[in-house]
Length: 427
Image 1 (cartoon, rainbow, N blue to C red):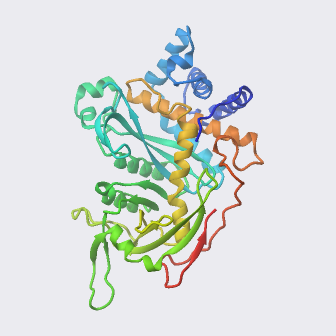
Image 2 (image 1 turned 120 degrees about the horizontal axis):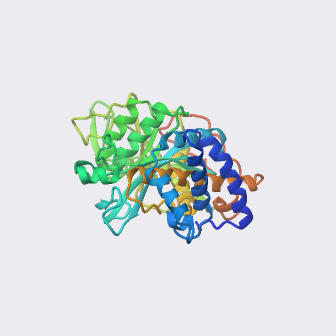
Image 3 (image 1 turned 90 degrees about the horizontal axis):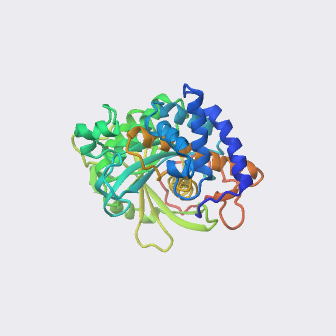
């Protein structure tokens, strides 16, 4: 998706919307001057060309503005959680058909070693070791649009074990070194427990080493989930008949491939591209993942392993584990593919408003910047949709090609495919 470039009249409209959003989301900031600097920073994220550093937002020669913004972002002790919570609650009420919470990893490569959380670490998304920060966004997503509302910043061991690192970056005493997936799971759990939001499925990709902890953590709070897993993940499943007592264990890819005769055909439309696609799906009930025998899965109900074949593929290529037992396979697949919607909006809106651009060294500053970038993302997208209310795909999120009809609402039915072939449609 192309980066958003706002014409002057559009930037003016969004500036007016930012004034409204300040009154909605920043009531928790105790002082008027703090809210005024939030307004300056948000307008800078939306309107400044190039990298959204504090210096660029302040403008050439505006040293007093730069100093005040630096104080507001990196040192001022305002709490970002109430702002993010207010943003999430507002979007829950106003977003079009929100379907799920999607966890989107974010990697920020760095040249130095002083930015909070930076370190040399292996990054699955890059397939290599990099000197970087690893973060994660939690997005409210629908088929039409998605919005980041919460962020995590993963802290490698030295940032929590070495007192000098903690003091220089202002890292809270409660912060621990976890994996990115563990950070995201903890954030979702806090949102579910304290943010007063509607319970929605969580969609995220999880490595084999994190899957047992993720399933157990979400199950303990009855949080529905659709977890993308690797085909090598071992899964446990029950036997069939007197001569095949269970449970058995096999890689997810092997179990799904053994059910190829029970596949269903699903026709759907790719996010942001308006292209039709065909995918074959099947599913199997599983008992859990036996990777960590010390921590057996605590799911109160059987899990479902879903597998997908892309067009003309000989072997299944995508796999998900879910605890959602009352939706058709097509709807589960639609939820899983919301990661594509988030990726489009991340590249088309969130990156252009500067989510990766913070150059400060403080933990507090990073979270302040991420919070304001989330509001700037919402202002850009809501402003675009407001200017074209009659068009369900306005501005930067409109896919090429003909407009799409309203997605069909499919009635609940058993998830495990039967013997007869079945064709389902997602648009």
